[in-house]
Amino acid sequence: MCVGVMGTALASPLYPLYQELWHLKPSDITAIFTVYMFGALTSLLFLGRLTNRFGFLPILRAGLILVTLGVLLSMLAWSTAAFVVSRLAIGLASGMITTSASIGLTQLDGRGDMKRTALVTTFAMTLGFGLGPLVGGLIAQWAPAPLFSAYLPSLLLGLMSIYALFRMRLPGAAPLAPPAPGRGLAQWLPSLTLPPRALRRPFWIGCMGAFSAFGMFSLYASLAPSFMRDILPWHGPALSGMSISMILFLSSSVQLLARRVRNKTSAVLGLGALTLCNLLLILTTYTESTPLFMLSVLTTAFGHGLTNLAGMSLVGKVATPGNRAGLLSSYLIVGYLGTIVPILGIGRLSDHFGLHTAIVIFCAVMALLTGTLAAAAHATPEVKPQAG
Image (cartoon, rainbow, N blue to C red; front, side, top):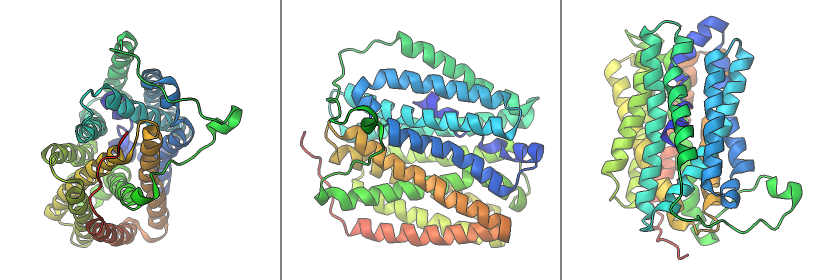
């Protein structure tokens, strides 16, 4: 999972270089970024149930092959269109990898500890997302041919992981869900899986928390390199890659430290931190203060880690073996929508009103949303694990 998602955020610190090479507008950058998310969303909608039907290992292998091919195409991209196709392939693979690897970790955990499984899942995902822009940014800053060489580590690790997965043998046959009652095209149509009605309020709070956390990370990943170039005295692929990675590495650390914290507490604190980071980012746009920017990065990492840990743990609590893949896909679909809808909006706003004004509007809306969610999470009782 870690290697598979490494290639997804790898291009983030490289966007200013692509912008200069192909004369792209901010809305073009956000559109390219969201193509990946559309691919991931499509994968979750149409392919999310494949893991239940065929087992996690074949789907994980297929996803890793596809993401490696996408990284190779990114490295060789000769035009905007070729790069867009590569991002779409990486997005499709990302949805397959995250769902199948998460289900695989759950099936291989003999102790049935959903909190531990959620921690391992979110930690591996966050670590992989963080390694991509860090390695890519450092190589792009100092290595020759940065739009080629930055992809080499991810490509090599992908090839090694593919080899390892085909050598892998499971300790026992993983249980497969019974075939869906639909036949032919019907079984491939998109559908959202929801928990029982009594559990939908906390489930939707968790989903919207993921929407907010994914949206904030996407702001940094898609536009922060250009934004930082305007407000900070130093800039470049290495700095933007390190700032993006810092959010994710600190998020992973927060998840490890908070593994024994109650879900409700994690959700309230995480959503509160996301509210604060948006307010700090608004202040940063007006003051151009480096300390304020760094503080906003730290609070974003804190909120991202706690919110995602709470959301994944909640999915583990409300799911049963028969609907776990569907619930996880539904949760991730809402999260990925958080990376698509707001970021497309901010790209359009920046074309008409400027990047600073667009970021202020984005952060004001997100602060209102996360503040409301924090209050709703505080008023919602703690969820107990479901039987089955």
